Length: 155
Image 1 (tube, rainbow, N blue to C red):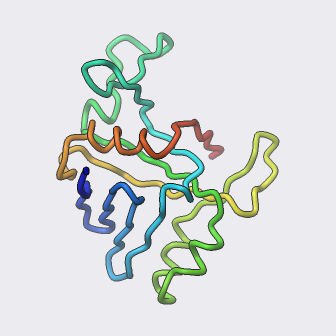
Image 2 (cartoon, helix red, strand yellow):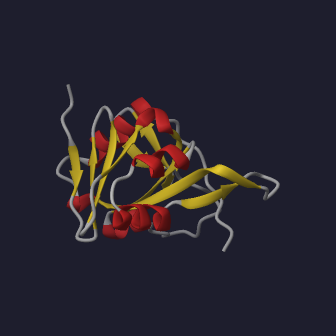
């Protein structure tokens, strides 16, 4: 059985295991999100499983010599789309932790820009050098428990 994969960061530590992900913000209590509560995961840059391991998807429209944030700094942006934020907020202990979580759960909209009352996403900045396991192990864990999909941001 795979143990816990830990991403060490100063403002937020994230522990990934077979049950789900535990977010440990600085000065707040831990927040656990079980895999069945996750609708899907979006990875930026997009990744795909190859026989030799996980690799970035390649796109022909990118300029020649393009280097992603994963290639240059080991940065992978992981967005967990939560099916329903209400039970998550209800079981979160402490006013400070609830405030932190509510601020990090971004509301979602559907393809017609209609807001979804219950669905939210939480974004995690994952850096390869801050993981205590290879990035491939984390991606394998995510792939076993979640589907990968796309989140379109409207800035």
